[in-house]
Image (cartoon, rainbow, N blue to C red; front, side, top):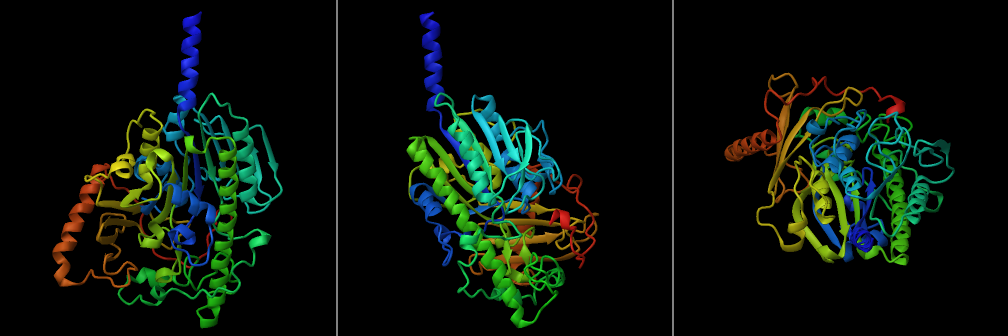
Length: 486
């Protein structure tokens, strides 16, 4: 009996010593909308504090710039063609392992709160979570209808960011100190349609926001980028309903663009408030230093760059995401310059939790990189996106990003020559991607080398000319997307 009691006590102490995981995921969050990434106007002191006490990854990217595929890559460590969530309407496969499901099997209490967005009309609980609280589709900034772990579906009055934080904290307060937990919070913010809560509705009224200069530097860009200008995803289009009469390319119509950006920034302020509440609770309960606190975005966002809004493309604002990790074992005040990816999150968190590795991963753990440096860390990676009939404003994209170069191609989808001319940018000399160098004869050898590297990296994940399936590019269209899926 004493032996059994000793073993049980040892097990309990071991379980309690494992780190908790609090994963805060924002939707469409640009790094430059945070103070710690250099925002001039958006003050995010509590997110900044996490960065100053932890690790800020200066160059983190999504492997597909679209909500559902990117979220699935964060959970699984896999590229979209392997986990199968290649659009915003596909479920995460029930049999597909994820880092929360692995932690659950390793003895963690697991929960998900907020925007899940894999399976547009499914708000039922998903495998691997003890508690699962979500909603159908995008949810609303005010008065969302929630499915509370499959037991009750009801509208909860209030602002989304506040409500989802309340729901998560209620569960956290119920957790036993004898068992580690993993809580995932999926914010709606700052996804369109950008609606700040009232206290922040006019926070940026005095800040002028012009169209970016690159919006008018399109002469050497593929034609599809110019065609996109007047669509749902262009700066002269409806701007997620901030512009009521469109298309509008008058100079004074920039005021609609400015209001859209103000709304976007305003939603971020509430996220910072949420981070403050969660951090305070962790401090009060003395769990802060035993919690891996992750703050991340799922994909980037174009705010007028190259004349575009939204994401999906392989240009820098579409790819870049913020990533801040606070956990004392990783050190404090660190900035990691190497390129990290969404597919790195699962293997990294599982290593930090001393949990079993995923059976397969396209990413790699950045734990060694953060702690001691890693000379073997990647210097190149590939990006892919498939044309969507529901959002016909972006072609099929296959791209390579190295520490210096960006090479983008646009396959037609049927094996015939690419639909549009390629793009090539020297990111060291031209981080804003303003000059397309693809026609420069002096760079022909560089282009060939990048093509070979792209094919090599894709093949390493199982993609070649036979297996890389994509829809036919039907071209940029002017029609608006269905209101139900915007």
